[in-house]
Length: 165
Image 1 (tube, rainbow, N blue to C red):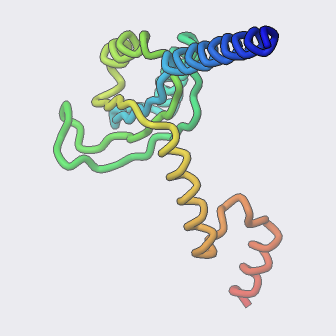
Image 2: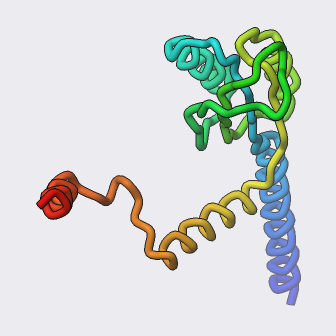
């Protein structure tokens, strides 16, 4: 009888230790946030300056222990109203994991960058982002859309020859 009581207490203490470890893991997980940085780059920047600006952003994310998950090469857009005498700008975004304690410093770094006209840094829920990404892929499959990478050059040349005949 005593052994079963001792075994029950031992099992109970093991369970508590396991719960504490799970809480500790969740706490560590809470130290890293999932963020989206959307930005507008000045219209007069060359491709090399755009590349340099984006690589600087990625480097500062990496140096703080963050991970860039997705990025978008900036596309030229017409602005609804002039920003710092620019009617056009390059719009791009980065999705990344970053330590929550360091995000304010990162925001200050972005403010100091003269190539960035405006930016928006928001915290996102990774679970919803993954769900949105999956639903977009499913939508494309249902619509029968092929991605550009799936079309090979030989098929393209055959179609061009048929059209030109």
